[in-house]
Length: 379
Image (cartoon, rainbow, N blue to C red; front, side, top):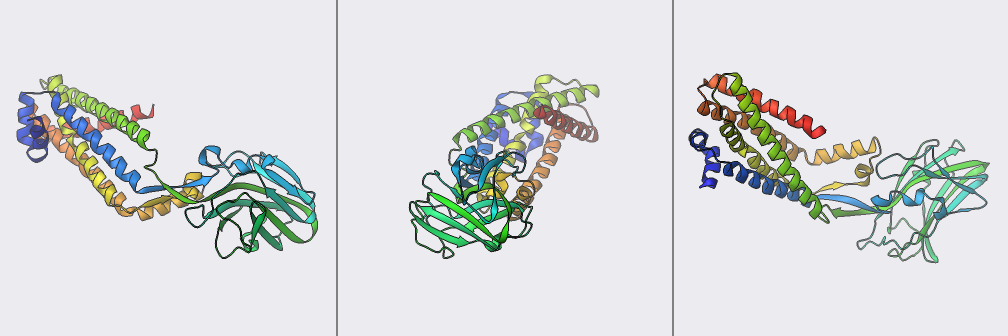
């Protein structure tokens, strides 16, 4: 019977609100709240099922571990190594320093050791190496630059000279792994270290900084380990509905009282709860929309949070999901209009107001409730 009353608000609101005003019971809004929570969690699940986030070694919890601690590095050919606390990449995924190397020579080289074993094979391994390189002197690019990957005592190298083009700025390298660009055979399933060597055409005071070193290219479904998130999302949905229900009921009660209506608090609150059936409908539409959208990938550039890069990555994701965003925005606007109309009908049937006054009261009450809700959510 209660379910019938809930859905009657959707297809016959005039009759439904008349019956509700005569016999207001909290069970109806409570059932709507339960349905909304279930649909909202289902929408979150559908979205997470289509969202894939790039995972790296080191992981996000460790940030860029290898370019935060100089103990991982072995400077070669007499170079000095230090941690730089003033010149580094700033972002969510990065720490607060870089590794600085300096030497008076025509070349500089450094090895990364003690990283364990990293699977970079073409069968499910990490497919890319990310590295930020900056040199402040000399003021021109190196004549030759080589990246060497170690697997135990074996090694494979790659020419990356063309990847290093500008001095005095961070050069962002994305190097593919286990492809034909490497010279030498190694076990890509067991990468244990690397070496970077840069050579100039004459002796000078060389100063090179490294930051943001990751193995990446593997994407993990956001559903993995999302149980806690979904539970918290359900709790947040409960708070959202409860707060909006109370605020909308209070706003309808206060504004109808201002117009001298003989409003009863219980009636106003129950009517407001039934009017919020639109939140359940919106959540159902969102779940269906997210289920139909294409898979979205969130690369390191986005999750890393580096200014400029994160915005560009986000814009690309939005371009891929433009249809979903349009549908989401259109549904949101339609639900606002629908909710105001339902509130207007509820006010009309529970008071002696004209239709104009009823809809005006509903409009002011609804947006007053939304304003107070947004304010409280920011506290």
